[in-house]
Length: 585
Image (cartoon, rainbow, N blue to C red):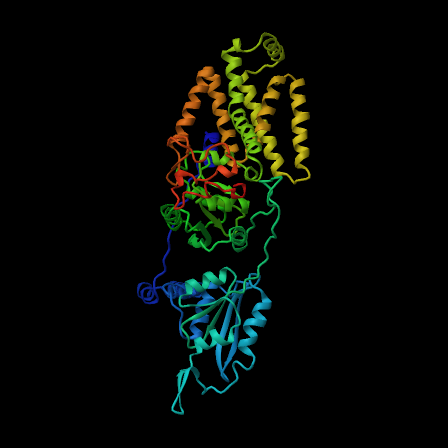
């Protein structure tokens, strides 16, 4: 019984009951405990202690419904101190100073985050023009701005504008290229959290949002996961604006639209929806923005999380959204009429919609001749099929269909398995799991040790397992070929899908032979036909068939690629003239 109780405590912990205690107010406690002086004194002292410890919470509750900025600078300061917990927050800077405008001084303060802003911009282009006297802020305060002037019959008529401190600061005292005015604290806090600084001035119910971002970012490097021999050698980084600039450098067109949408109630992560206004389908763009606007989560920190939140069918392991770190690949899909989503803080772009043939393509296919690209696609298709089916077919043949094996090879297989004490299914699953373990270990260890782990796992462990009679040599060859072909699949998620389904094919092959393999293939294809990506069938352009193919699995010569994909239903169907190489005619 003790063992059972211990097991229940470990795996089925019982939640301790929670108790809520409330202390009575001073009047109630004195009336109810008037006969007990010591108890009343203790209750009052506890109540006062609670008021002291929860003072900040009370102030926070008073400001909980505040949305708009106060005209009083003192109230704004107190509100910001409560919201940002300035007593304990070490990197929040609230700089109070006197602002000089037309020989008058106004109380003001700056709010920014140390480490997120460029201090040179803050000191020289924000504080210095506002605090020091210069030609812009030292002339007589009675002078007004002349809007227009006209002379008629020696009479000069001037239209003047009354002095406005808001417009004066915005147009004369802030030499910044990106300054906005905000009326709500929500917008100000969002800008400050992203690296801007906020300027508050006494008597004004608005604040100036000044772009002074200066946080450190990673420089642009070569792609690490999508390496090509011929093509651009640039990859996305974690900075959203750097990524959008990489795309705009390739697509020099004013129809490229990039809309920002914030996702996450706490993190407020900025996601940029990119599309070509004159090419992309309006319904597709509206669907992407609708899904982003209706994601109700607290935080979003990566594009991988967003990808799972945007998928149509989350219960299937088939990849339904293209993920890439290459700006050239992203730009190509944009020009084809697809929609791209960039996430601030993630070096990957999400491309929708996606079909199965997209995951067998490489960025290099568009940079080499179509004959070379089609040969590589044949190799990738063969790699996909070998990765998915080879272990299962081996189990099916050796278990049910020995007549398919040549006699000499059959004798070799039987002789190699004579000393193996395990069944074929147990043997191959152990080897597949061992290979996955070696691959995972090679990824997680430091890079100088990773190749060493792979060599040790492939050579020493495999050879030792064969010599010990745990596995047969032919099985080592099968697992090695399967592992090598899995690396030839261009998309990481599709390769992962094959690694999962490979075990399904092994089990079905062991249970029913080639009939089980056929049944598993039928289920696999049935699932693929059911999957959709933003309303597009996953097996487009083959299922459903439309009689003609504008594009497909294999590349056409570049001068024949006249049409965009039919399933995208783009505004512009043609992407080049019928005769594109006019120099030949």
